[in-house]
Amino acid sequence: MRRVCAFVLLGLAMGCRQQTAGLWPLYEQTLKHAKYIDLTHTITPAIPVWHGFGPASFGPTLNPATGKPYSYEQDGFNATAYRLSTDQYGTQLDPPAHWAPEFPGIDELPPTFAVRPLVVVSITDSVAQHAGYHLQVADLAAWEGRHGRIPEGAVVMVRSGWSKDWPNPELATRTPFPGVALDALKFLHLQRHILFHGHEPLDTDTTAALEGESWLMHNGYTQAEGVANLDQVPETGCLVTIGYPKFGGGVGGYARYVAICPPEWSHGVTVGELPEAPLARLARPLHWDSAAGMRVR
Image 1 (cartoon, helix red, strand yellow):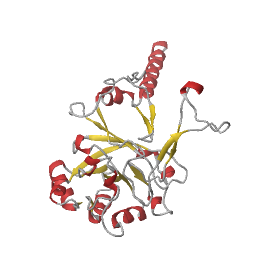
Image 2 (cartoon, rainbow, N blue to C red; image 1 turned 180 degrees about the horizontal axis):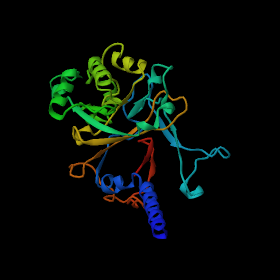
Image 3 (cartoon, rainbow, N blue to C red; image 1 turned 180 degrees about the vertical axis):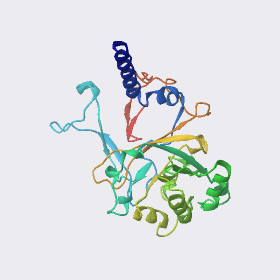
Image 4 (spheres, rainbow, N blue to C red; image 1 turned 45 degrees about the vertical axis):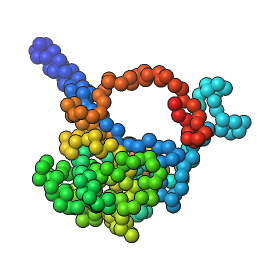
């Protein structure tokens, strides 16, 4: 009996250890060896933005007691005050409350947005022929003909090549620009039940009423805008991580998207390939550049 009890206790202990491990083996066996690709533009005061919002400005954070900026020399640290004209800036995640207040804001999105299958649909050939080309249902059918059905709950990013000229501020006023047709959005959400789609430009389409964005927001859907580096990601087989600040009552969101791709993929970096902890000491320290309006190296 003692041997049986000891065996049972050992089995329970091993079971607890296995249960504690949870998803850690997934990281060690898969994610640790994957390739990571940033799909996010760096936010600076000079990036493209709609004229109705206006530009942002960066500056030093001031000590409220003295009115003087903090400095490495005097205080041992530094801090930045970001005067952002809008939450529709750079790479974004639009919650439906951006247009429809009866739906969730950025702080009300569920945590299950964090990791999803990533689908990349390229329309670059069509855009090369017509700069204002919009993704069509036929493009999605062709993608599925090559790769199979778009997974339910996926994030579908539309690669157009529009962001290759980023951060040229003229992009904000350049017309026409590539977009996503309303029929394609309805197909993705109503037929394939994706989580959301994303695109490189700062608007969904070129219709006068922005019909695609209006339909999305008023039906409770989110979208990504200002996405970068889709030319470095395969059309299928990757995941995407989704992060954004949780502003209370926010109707827009600065977002960071990172593609996680198979180890054999030619782009991206692997865990351990670059210094992480501690991070590397760089040759040039950050310093304020008045012309750039921000700290640079």
